[in-house]
Image (cartoon, rainbow, N blue to C red):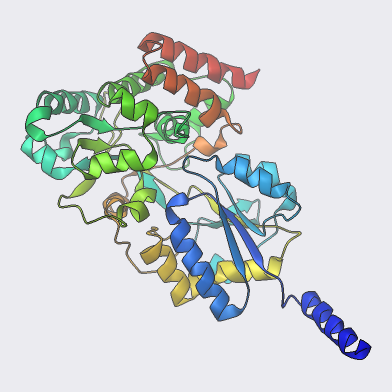
Length: 411
């Protein structure tokens, strides 16, 4: 009996040493793709024998809080998400070099540290101001004309005057609440409009100024006026109490003409009955001059824990790009716009399809919000947006408080 037990123990130790029992823990930030990712994890385990556990933060829960808790749990994730330089700098001592990975040859959007490849681009994401084409047609508004502040303002005013006729509760479905965890909509994605609209991809002009505690006065004033316009034509209940799903449902049910969200919402949209209207994107054109483009960018990268199951983690990432099942999961199940040249599948989600029209025309601006100091966008700026949405401060005070908060970065 002792010999049998000794043999079993030796076999178990051998399997652990060779990685046969090693599993992969992934911490990711997209609640929208969690069901698809969990399904793919099961499929991956069936095919490879490697157990995969997916932990998700985001949406109404702060992903960075979830990640930090996992890092302190005694079982650090093998793969997690970084969102630009702030996330990379925070964790770079734990991040493995991904040299030799098969997927690298198929993309030019890997996260780099000098010549070292350290991040796997998850997808292309993007956003403009989504619109219900039927409502705009009934209001006699051509979305192609919505390329500057004055045109958008006039469209909002006209639609607002026709709300009863059009069956609308609001012109714009937008959220900004802190208690609902929606400050990423305002303090990150909306603030990025100031940073990049009308500029070439990777232009650092305005983010560099912000990181020095400064803004371009005229541009920032125009941006703040646009925020006020969006808030004015939403409702306080949606702004302050609306969840991500409530915001989406109001738009899909034809109760709002416009929708302030990106193509990452497609997995949620596809769970519901198909809409009977065309969805498109017009620009968040906050300037008085024309800006004919939407935001399109690589917002996040998977990184691998240098102290974790590196080989298994790298194999998992390779499989996402090089296997039929991985490619199908990313594009068809998770609704992503692929960042890889060898993936020719098209997403089926309406927001991703709308985004692809802009990317195909090369009418896109970048994203620099993830260079903001950790917690600044969602925490510091997010609270100021909420005060404005609640009408606790007026437009002038909003602009002053925002500039004061930005000035504090340099102190």
